[in-house]
Image (cartoon, rainbow, N blue to C red; front, side, top):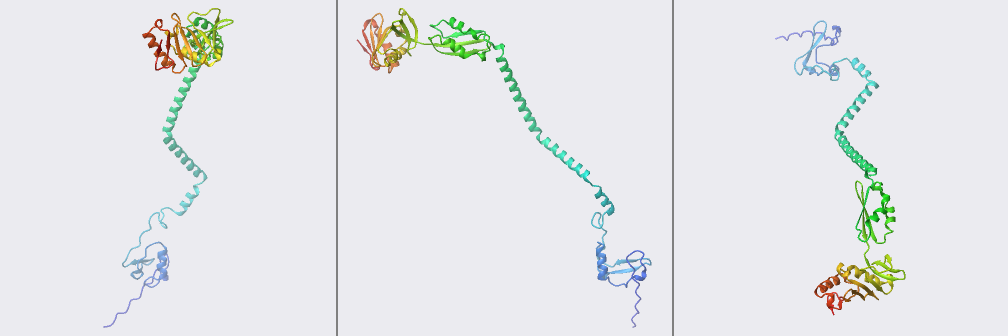
Length: 347
């Protein structure tokens, strides 16, 4: 059998539109240059051995026989953007300094708004504390202003604790403080007036709003009389001279102390007299001592003596003496010896 004569191959048309068919190449597999051109266009290429080119007269069309088909380029991908490059370049050129500045300013405003939103609670708390502090300050200023105003001026002076002193005389001496606001009372002026009263041992000032000033005084406790050339001087346990009279005051014992008011014997005698109960101290007519260890008391009426000894354990001695005198009155005895606090000897 004869082999059929092969048909002549049609000319290969160019891929570019309008290219004449005379420039087409024979219909066989694509060359390496053709495959590179298709790949450069960004389209998937089919196997070069499975494609043929058909000339339709004006243009040549490549028809793949099998294998994967070329995919259309994606919108927005490289080589497949949905807008012309010229429009994108014009848009990028329009973004200038003004737009950047506006964007930065908007960002700062948004940041400040967030900061204000998150710090609102802190601001409310600070405002609450500031209001409370301002209220306390205004209250304090108002109180001080009222206290130092004539609304709280001294209109009445009251002396408390005066027994031997004339309380009315002390109040009259302090009348210079009348009309002075209570916080502005001159304590040095009050002290200068009270120093002239030797019987006052200590004092304290007390303000009673709105108009009263209270003076609390503690009087000295006299323990006896020293006989001097000027008369009889009344002294307390500290040796302070309270008054001097020509005749001895009734109910006040005479002091016969070696060394006078500056001696240790006088200090012991003063401590003994202060430890005695009031009813026994009122019966003492004489106190004598040559040393701090031989204090002796004389009771009026019966002339009974109390041998006290030293001033040690004076409180316990006074308690035992009161019990013994209740059991055996001074009219029945001549001596009470309490020099030993544990044993009371009666003669």
